Length: 440
Image (cartoon, rainbow, N blue to C red):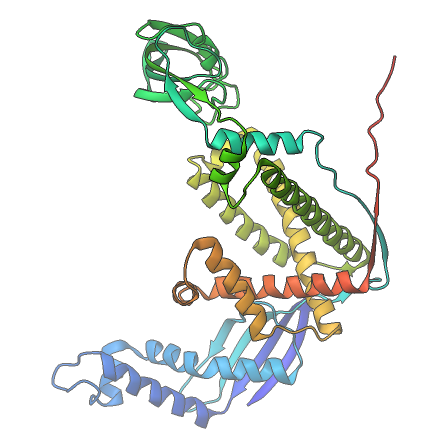
């Protein structure tokens, strides 16, 4: 077997592979025998038809491709290894010449990893603004717990307040035409936290049970449905019930109901502990991001356009799936943000992701950071907890999608490299910068 390697441009290499006629003929004969095992040829038991009969039945080109599928992976792997090529995508055959009895020649293209020149990535001193919790963080957290245990009591003797839950029938129209999906019966609308069109909930306040009335609103200009964008609408409303939210009293009995607490003080201490952990986690995340950003900024890499285009296509497909899951369309996003602007943003995101990945891989190679079985076990444990599955069931699902396994492996390597960077660099927390208030 002979190989000739030629660099074409950037990180694309062309490999000329020559396989001796004897090996090619053997592969062709074995391919014909394999095909004979699963095709029906009149007059012959399956697998017993002579090669000439199989050739007439399926054609020589099919047999050649079957033989190529068996020959080329090993040949390409040997060529890559012999020439020390760091291949990052699946090699592809651009042309071949296969005549039984003669040497088989094939031209293969491979894309190799771009060269990464690392800057300083150890012994750095990085300043990070310390995370600050809002002054009312504790009060809000406590109030959220109280709200979770709030009850709803029917209101019978007054009009709707802006803190009530109104159970309503509604039907909306635009220009006299009924809005598709714009109606419901006995819908419980939280007037204090409504996600309806602005102005909808506010017009229910002050109305009474059993009252029927119209409200007028205007759909937002950026509304996802093109037909309704900026359109004035009329909704016929009937209030069936009003409910008032009753927040429980904060006392020891309530604390005991919430969790393993005996007193309100114990509950409050637990809330403060949660907030402190939240601050600590934010500081750790910000520290990792700051150190990694400094390492990335100091690294140099020329990213080929082919890699950018491929990653951008992958990102675009991801965005489309997310939008579809939300009931939105890619076309509407293009109209909102502009097709060219959206494409450019995705390409910039693709560049960032590629550079991050390449730098991580380079540091891992330089520092001999490798994945261990325990690293993947940790990742699987995290995922099984998130999805509420056993690790066995999770592995069964993942085994159906090798791309997901590869992605998880990359994430696990990312985690190890980030841990390494945090060990080898120093972080100093500083007071957050205060925003200047302009005075006239």
